[in-house]
Amino acid sequence: MTAPFVVIGIGNTLRRDDGVGHAVVEVLREHADPAEIELSTCHQLLPECVVSLEGRRGVVFVDATVERPAGEIGTRAVEADAEPWRWGHQLRPETVLGLLDDTSRPAALVVGIGAADFDYGEELGKPVRAAVPAAVEAILTWTRTVDTTAST
Amino acid sequence: MARTVTIDPVTRIEGHAHITIDLDDEGFVSDARFHVTQLRGFEMFCEGRPFAEMPSLMARICGICPVSHLVASSKACDALMAVSIPPNGARLRRLINLAQIVQSHALNFFHLSSPDLLLGMDSDPEKRNVFGVLAQHPKQTKEGIRLRAFGQELIRTLGGKRVHPGWVVPGGVSHPLEEEARDRVLAELPEMMVIVERNLDWFKGHMDGFQEEIRSFANFPSLFMALVDEKGRLDFYDGKLRFVNAAGNAVGDDVDPADYARVIAERNESDSYLKSPYYRPMGYPDGMYRVGPLARMNVVESLGTSAADQEWAEFQQLSRGSVLSSFHYHYARLIEILYCLERIRELLEDPGILDPHVRAHAEPNARVGVGASEAPRGTLFHHYEIDENGLMKKANLIIATGHNNLAMNRGVLQVAKHYINDGQVDDGALNRVEAVIRAFDPCLSCSTHALGEMPMDVVVRDAQGNVVDRKVRS
Image (cartoon, rainbow over all chains, first blue to last red; front, side, top):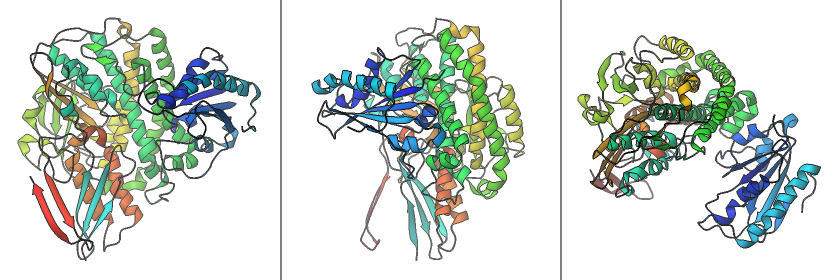
């Protein structure tokens, strides 16, 4: 039975804060019902994601962002982008959704966690690590409400 | 006026390369070359490392086919330890190697080559990619993605992760397969069989639309090489080397892979980091041979599984001797996926697949070890020499893509001459020059390994393109 929601943690765990998406997914394992929420991680989004999202009610992309101060969490709804895309090694969430047809496209949310330290290493910086519980809560709340309109 | 057309980079392949096409004064192709522009150097920086580290180090050569390097490297280490690995260690290695071939072949056919096959060689280059195919042929493309994901998931199930698993080790594998995981993989196989059979039917039904490409895509006599088992059947994990000629006759047979240097010589080219091996008894360049799916179809006496053997028999009807057109690498690739799925089922249904004894342990007992296996793109050799402390003294790697280098270069020239005339160079012609390379499915990240000091040909040109200086190191 396919879970209605999927959460994808994106990033490189060998580049410190870039691995925060994976860290969020690991904490989610302790809180999420596997029948409701499937958890996965990847370095970057690939065409394979398209197949795994078909027919879901919702998908959450969790990633580090440099557009916010370290540890600050922002969420935004994702709209499908139908523009041609030629770079097969790295897709944006918008592109992944654009490759799904209207009938199988899930609601989608990006959870961006402000990150600052991308040096070699597996440890998250202190503010980023501290943000993980709040990111988990934001994801669980969204899956209960599937509110795709809010952007904070 | 003579000029050179450059395709840079070559797209939808693994790694970095460019192609140069020289036109003469009348605008006809006088030469064409495939230049591989990246160098890795793994042989050098593994020197001094403990030999047991080699599988994990060598797996980092490639993110597409790390499993192939794990298998060949571990086999070389088995030879250094002079051990016979437990039967189930060998079964499980075979299993992960088959999974690797499924995912890699699916990647080439559906992600990299299907834009040419489904959208057309002359289609809009802006949309001639996997996303364009997904938009126009969503069902077939998603099936391809599912097939690849199946192979990747089987690798993860066995090895713990999809890319660079450390599970294949000297002496066997690190841990056995769980019953629940076996059952999960078995349950998925019927769907995968349907996908590959449907796509085989599609390919055979559309070959008529590619007759010109079939005639011109590296379609010439050459030798073909692959590993075969004791009955002459396809064997991706073990066996002896066999060379057949264009007529389909064996010219070299029953060669122990450890003796590869007796039949394979290597050569450097001045314009590429890709080595050019050739069949030593016939010399350079007459000893040009091809490896990989097409070669395997030509070399074997049967595949060894029922559905794949039926497809192979039909494939053989293409020619009375060896099938020579490299366009049929695509066809052969699909047949091999079918074979792999059947073999995966056979292995998983063998009660011994759950045997917990999967690894032999030993200290080094030999100074030289060679490991060979069939990777997705062809035969892969890892050759190691160690000192008395088990530290690496020397490594030589001969990668599948390298075996094909001479044929790829001749194929580029053949396609360029066929499609470029009177100086007219359009996008469709250039795409076909790239597409013949894609048919071979080169993995350049894997295959650029130095053979001693590289020959260099440095040409300095002024702003008008005139040669003002040239230095050659041969």
